[in-house]
Length: 389
Image 1: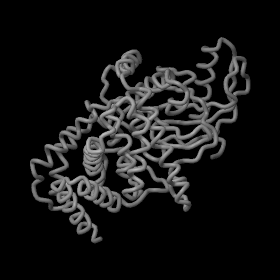
Image 2: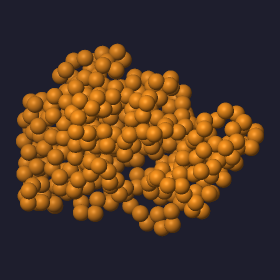
Image 3: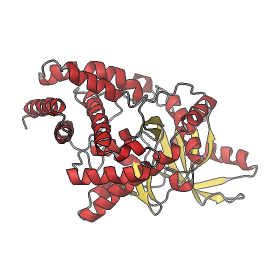
Image 4: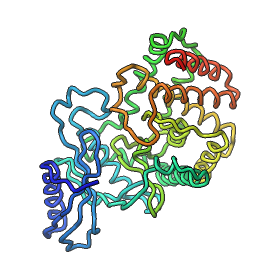
């Protein structure tokens, strides 16, 4: 990362100085901006606080969502075309997270925000290792430790936010975002309706059995309902997960909201389905992650102490994630989701989709769900034939 002097950077720094000066009542000067590589419409900078009359941290992170010329033509970004919906949700999410105890807070602290400027001023999490780097470590024990820490961090966040959905909804209304539906949940109806046709069109799969369609529809309700609802940043792809001295932290709350918590732990088990990743986990390692997460939440959700109940919920969550991943990436242009982000775990979509359906088949087989296992295996065969694997 290098210091950046482009005009957008200067504008973001100037807006942040104005915001902090207004908030503290004394001049605040920010210097040495460094571009942290914001994606899409976001400019993300690390700055140093030169004049610090009210004991602001020595460094801060600034995030501003800006209009991108021609972006209204873009498809696939789960926010609206000018980014305001995503920004308002992120601002409400950070306000909500600020109210949590420090050890339960999933990511950076919010120091200030400006809704009109679409600007957030966040604490700097410092030098941190992206989870993608840690998961590529040749030391198996180190990889296991990273996965367990991620599962535990998710569980602590879930346990701390159960029963507070009304508080989050109030914050959304306060920032002018009354619709509680996040960008992923909004796509469930289309995914449920369109994936069977995609499987027929692209893979030659015969009509999907009604019992599979019914199970997928039930699984889709985990986003809007579910017995184990808690807060989630929702965009849990690997480039939004870092590890620093304080543990695992989650970034980017543009899709933040409440949903069934089993969707979060299963997101990693399903190889991060919102990205083109491939990270295969042995059955034993998956179970270790599930147990680490369960240990943090079973006190508030005693029903999850039953292995059969938990296995059924995990399979439901895996099923809807694989369904969504197919909806996003099976079409050749996969414009239904923002451009797939490249990182150390990225693979061609042929490999990503095949491995996800294969893991679903294995998971269903272990759970004794023969119908799902056989259907998923048929999709795997068709995917391999399509890409001649």
